[in-house]
Amino acid sequence: MRRSLLALATTAALTLAACSSDEEAAEETTTEGSGEIVTLTVGASPVPHADILAFIDENLAEEAGIDLEIVEYSDYVLPNRNLDSGELDANFFQHVPYFNVQVEENGYDFEHGEGVHIEPYAVYSDTLTSLDELEDGAKVSIVNDPSNQARALWLLEDNGIITLDESVENPTIFDVVDNPKNIEFVELEAPNLPRTLDQVSISIINGNFALEGGLVPSEDAIAIESGEGNPYANVLAWKAGSDKADAIQILDGLLRTQEVADFITETYPDGEVIPAF
Figure 1: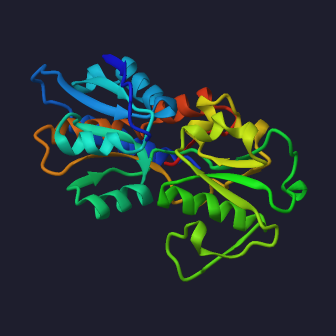
Figure 2 (figure 1 turned 180 degrees about the vertical axis):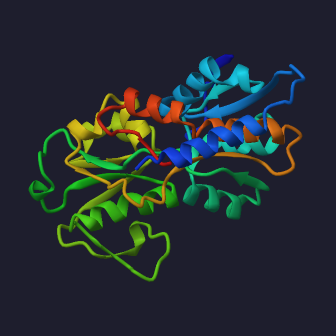
């Protein structure tokens, strides 16, 4: 296994039945007695995606006939571009709504597996202990990509801060129809949200970037997204027609085994990452 950090210049519930079926699927697609190890180059966000992949590579992959080379990305753009160009065999960093937007906007011929885990969105503040303390005209930082921005806005709406246009499928800050506190939105790249928390009243931050910024959702958040019925589960994605399709299916099955579920819950005991299977 090789795990590398890609330096970027651009800005960039559990059920045993489900686990058992995925384990069986992984076993069924293992290279049949050939002894051949297939290397997969997989792009991933550092936390928790790359950590989960590293666990698989160190504990499950060899027996299943695969070896992982993990390339870490600190943005949400390059992993899909590099998958499309053939630099990656698969990537593991995105949820299905973001995947769908990217495929539609860029014409990618991608496929994806089933949900692996959820990283709850949460509201953080250096100065407030409750959203009730949010003052008129407060600055609120929010991610600038459309699908994740909608998710962040829904969290604010659920907490009574704003009202969104119900007719818009993926609302942006321009679809806020009621803003009683006259909050001022500050749009930023996702990795910059925890870094600039001291410059705003509140920030709505995705789980993996919160973790990278030293924030623990269950301890530091003043409002948090529910995991129940959450459509934002993260998935493995790959290019349709890949010549490593069998090996990719093995990896996709391994991602939803009981061993991985246990690793997630033991590594993130405060609910900052939740198995989605």
